[in-house]
Length: 83
Length: 352
Image (cartoon, rainbow over all chains, first blue to last red; front, side, top):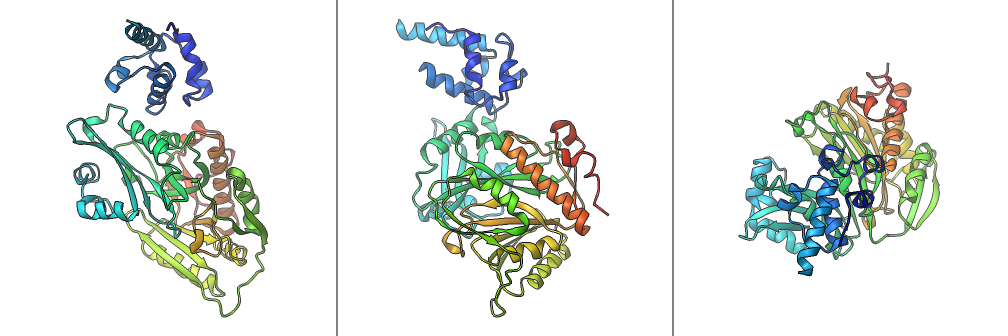
């Protein structure tokens, strides 16, 4: 399942991130430095778990900083599942 | 669980139940509280949340809160996951619970955000409800205001006498939920019969400096009784007095006008606050500051919340100007944080 950071950006608002914050996010930059807070970030992780059927524990999630990191994680999880 | 409360609150949590296992078990068994516990693989307690009976006279309306996480798990999503579990598995599903309410602090947005997407709707602002000392270490300056928000799962239809003096505010909030109400005018001139006694239950929250009065019935001597409660709250050194008026009473408009002339201002509309315990299901929250106080910055995460803050603070200013009542001095950060036009430099001191 190939997904890009830019495509994940479209899910930020769905996770409850304010529209103006979501629109300004750079997929390569750390999310927590771009206006996501301690509720937005886990809500976004939970949405990704549900949407892409991946399991994302807290320790792993906190190591993923940018949308591009999340996209790479989802991609590798899909490869593992398919293997 | 007791250890978790001790870690977070020391011995200062105002209720004994969480500290005494037998009491907590019994409270859960009886339905007074529904505790949600998150445990690690080794069985140790990670955190908790509670759905519990608190201030409302309606025992079928519970508060949602007490979200605590062990310090060892602060850098995890524990609080979020506990909340997610509560919202997906417990909200709307608990026997004997018709409605939930929360009081979200306004000096940050985390608690307010938890109400997002789970059908809690903002319906009031409790101005300066909590003392600065309760948030030591968080950089808070001034008393902290709380947004009141309510989720209704099982409505109880009934009369709603819309108080003349705060009709606009009540009607603005009312459509937030699909409530079945028989709306009638709550005229200020509807004086209760001479032989009708005021039924008022008073709670004192010494640590918070708050007096909270639940008025189950408005009697002919309401003005004297409410004035007495305000005087007693002042004598106790409290900063805030709140009145929850019965909107199901034809005399609610009378009581509202009495309080308005005593320097009170609009606080909120609380659906199901009285439930079957009152003359009608809902309450009108009216409040009065007892001396000028500094208020911490009031942040909101939704337009509805911002509208309510604007509405309440504007009425607080009105009470100051019209009746020389004390008002809150809103943090200077407020102006830069959100464009509340009514606090634009005008809240810097009590009206004189």
